[in-house]
Image 1: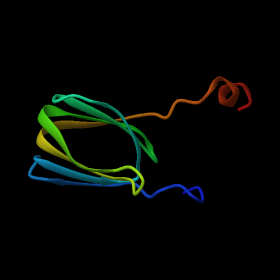
Image 2 (image 1 turned 180 degrees about the horizontal axis):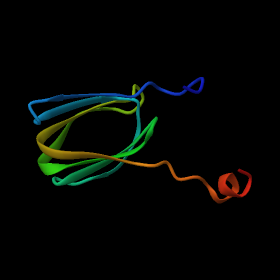
Image 3 (image 1 turned 30 degrees about the horizontal axis):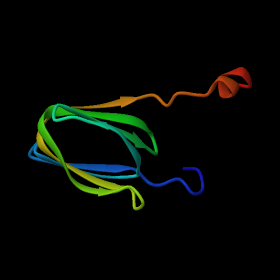
Length: 86
């Protein structure tokens, strides 16, 4: 882990309550999908009736409740300059 980077963890209870740390930004929110930027890349939470119950981006903690059907990580996208100078 890079110094200054938040630790990322997930705890899913009964597919109804997802508690996360290491969240840096809520990218989008709908009742069927929540997209979060985390220390390990973007995380898409899919389901229905999703609600943000706790949101502390300063502390990196987020709680999503509802019927959760999928958790999908998307690989971090590198900037143009990052790809150019690999």
